[in-house]
Length: 622
Image (cartoon, rainbow, N blue to C red; front, side, top):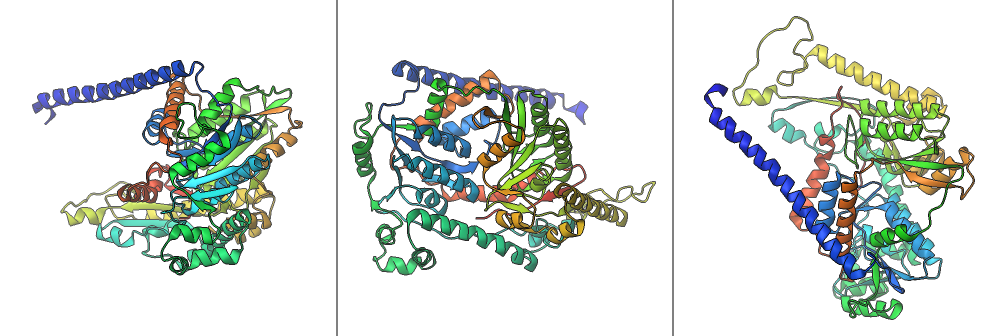
C-alpha cells in the first residue's frame, strides 16, 4: 500500500516540516517580543527593576501552591505570560517576606490571594508562618480580595487587616475527600480491569472496581481528613482572634447567618469578624496610599513591587553569605513518581537520580535534604531512587527527608532511607501498600466485530496481551509480583525505621496517616518544616549556624532558558496584578471542569512502571 502513495508520503513530510517551522517561528517571535519589552522597561527605569523608597510588597499567589514549578521552561514561560503565573512556588513567597522584613523600603505587605486555587495545608501554613514573622517587625500585612475561598482565607487570616469588596463572600466549605469511580463506565466500554493489591486500606485501585467508596477507605480517611480540618480551624480562629464556636456557626450555618443581614454576604463577614471592612478597589488603593505613599507612575494607586520582581532586584544587589564549611543541598522531589526522564513537577527516576548523584559528588555539599511532596507512583522508579539515595549515604553525607503536604506510598518509600524524617503536623503520609492494574480489551473488540485467535509455544505465550483475556498464568504472575513488592516495602520500612516487621505490618495495609499520628507511631522522627530539617542536616554534618549556604540542586537551565523565564516572570508580574483589588478574574466553569478532569486522569498519564506495579496513594483533599 505504501508504494501506491508516494504523493501522500511527500505531502505528509512537507506538512511535518511546516509544522515544526511554525513552532520555531512562534518561539522566535515570543522571544523577540519579550526582549523588546524588557529592553524598553530597562531603558525607562535606567537600572532595570527598581524598588521604591517607600512601597508595599505585593504578594499575589496564583494558581496552585507548589514546591517546584512544573513543566519545561518554555511551557512555564508561556503560562507566566498568559496568566501571570498559575503556579506559586512556596519558597519564593517565604524568601521575599524574609528579605522584606529587614528592608526599610518595604513599609507593608499587601496580600492579594484572589487568584489562589489550591495547595496543601502544610504549604499554606508555611506561608502563614512567614506572614506572622513579617508582622513581628511591626510592619502591617493587609489582605484584599473581591471574595475569599477557603484556601485564600487561610492566608488572609494571618494579616493584620482583611478587606473585601462589599459584594464579596467568604466561602469556607470544609475539607472533602472525593474520588471519581469508573466501574460502570469501564463495564459499558467492555474493558476488563484486572486489579491486584496488597493492603486492606490500599484504595487507589478502587475507582476501577467500584462506583462508590469502600467502608475501609471511608473509615481510614475520616480520621486524617478531620485532623486536617481541625488544624485549619485552629489556625484560622487563633490568627483572627475569634472563637471556634463563632467560626463553626458561620461555616455550618452560612445560609442562616446571611438571613440576619438580608443576604448581604459582605456585611455578614464583617459581623462575624471574618473581615475588618468592605472597600471598593479604589478605596483600598487610597487607603494604601496613606500608608506607603503613591506610585510615581500611577498617582491613583500606591507604590508597590511584586514579590517576584522584589526577589530578582534584591538578589542582584544583596550580599551573598559565603560558606566557610560547606553547603546544605535541597533536592525537591515533587509530583508523581514515574520511570525515566521527567520535567520539573514530576519525579522522574532518571532525572531525580541525576540530581542525587550531583549532590553526592559535589565536594562543597556537606549534607542533603530531600524535600518530598508526592503521593507516589511507579514501584520500579521508586526503587531506582532509593538505590541512588543509598549511594549518597555511603559518601558519609547526612540525608534528611522533609515531607511537604503529601509524602505517601512511593513518597514515603523514597523518604524512609533518610537518616532522619521530618513532617508537618498536617502532612499526609504512610499508605504503605501496593497495587497493580492491567486492563484488557477483548470484550471491547468483540463488540465491534474484532476477534483474536491463535496459539503459542508456552503456557504464558499471549496471556499478557491486552487484546485477550488475562490468562491464569499471567494472573498468578501479577499476583505473586504484587505480594512480593509489598513484602519488599514492609521489610525495607522495618529495616530503615529499625522496627519489628509485625509492628510495621500493623500500621501498613495501605493506611494513610496524618503527620502528627505518623510521628506517634514511629513513621517519622520529628515534626517541623523544611527550615528545621535543613538545620538538623547541617547539625549532623557539623556545620555551625550561619556558616553554611542552602543550595537547591536542580536541572541546570541553559542561558536562553534562564533569560526566557526571567523575562516572562517580569512581564507576568507587571501585567497580571496591576489592579490592587486583587482578582484578575475567576476561571470560567468550563476551565474549572477541564482542570478537575485533568486532576482525575493525571495519575493515569504517569503510569509507566515497567511491571505495572505502583506504590501510590489517591489522598488529595478538595
